[in-house]
Amino acid sequence: MSDDPQDKIIHEIDGIQEYDNKLPNWWLYTLYGTMVFAVGYWFHYHVGQFGEGPEAQYQVEVAKANAEQAARIKAAGVMTPEALAALVKDKGTVEQGKQVFAATCASCHRQDGGGVVGPNLTDEFWLHGGAPERVYKSIKDGIADKGMPAWMPVLGPDRVSAVTAYVISLRGTNVAGGKAPQGERESFSMRD
Ligand code: HEC
Image (cartoon, rainbow, N blue to C red; front, side, top):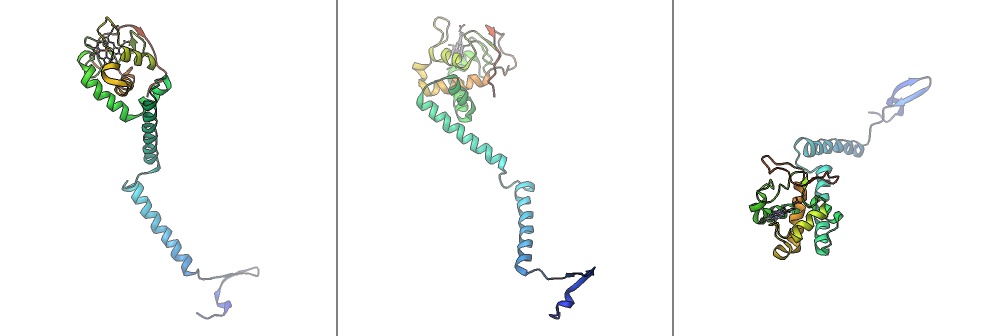
């Protein structure tokens, strides 16, 4: 191609000239690079789902924060309703509580909490209160003379708070074949 600028003119309308200037190579290759990257990105995150998207990463971060908060609460050992609500959000604590329940409580409350000798813990009826701090108290101190032992001296604070979190997570799940309701009906604003 000649270097004469006149050769580059591809349009001329009303005295306005449009040149066909070649784009510099660095610019073009950057453009092609972004296209290749976009296809690769799309394939990695959306088609193949090899990479974790922001949603999954967010869930991981939330789970980590919940676990850290649960550890702080257990170390402090003060079981306010808010503290118990936070423990219920930590999967690790609830899972620990589930194991304690299976080993220690299932003989009287059934494996799934549906109740045998002890009442159904999965319905919305409570003899001693279904609010988190009431459930905690029932488990910690037991119900003297009614066959529900006090668990704090047996299990210690860590396992008592974990099993409380698990029992709170069972509330209102109404397992099949559970024992008939006992006590007062309560509805809960805090359940997740
Ligand atoms: C030896 C049998 C027995 C074992 C073991 C037992 N419980 Fe109980 N539990 C009972 C009985 C009986 C009651 C009902 C007391 C009453 O009638 O007032 C009860 C009541 C409760 C309540 C109160 C329910 C309400 O309606 O207010 C909770 C919560 C509870 N148990 C949790 C647990 C947990 C958690 C464990 C294990 C750490 C456990 N129990 C182990 C027999 C047992």
